[in-house]
Image 1 (cartoon, helix red, strand yellow):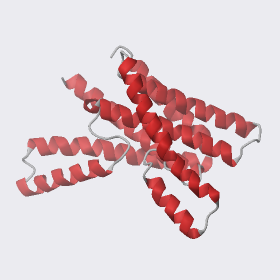
Image 2 (spheres, one colour; image 1 turned 120 degrees about the vertical axis):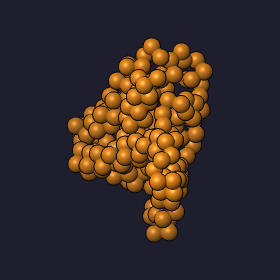
Image 3 (cartoon, helix red, strand yellow; image 1 turned 90 degrees about the horizontal axis):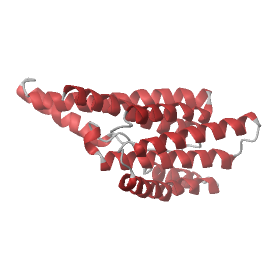
Length: 222
């Protein structure tokens, strides 16, 4: 049981870091596109339209159908796969290929808006697969790994109970620690993605992709 709990802890930390990383790197390096929090793109879209932005603002809306298709695809993968981590393998593969593609075009000095948007959309697709994994295999993590609102809400409720009961509620302490893993992991990923996006661009998607493949390999017999 202790080994299983440690495994959940590590998987949760990894997935939240990857989601925070991808969400921020696309926001920084791909015209303010959120790849994990796709509903955030509605806000960016509305803001850019009000500012009088060009047709590129409408691309933000494309993230929504891409995300939906990704989640449906994740569900199909889960039905056919014997290893529940197969979804994460495909997520990692997509991120690696996206990073490689961007790096090749960058090396050839052929980067255009459409290359950037295409890589951003494949990253959205990858995050859609991770969201599907989180819904289908909720017990594999301590909470949602791509959106922190629910985790922050639970952590706040736990903290309120602890303050009320003098930190004697063992269940509340355990739950609070689990939520901290998700929140801190996502925050670390965001900082890493911000630095990577600003100084190195979308080619750095190779890194979270490789980490995801390693996660799958470690759980290949699960």
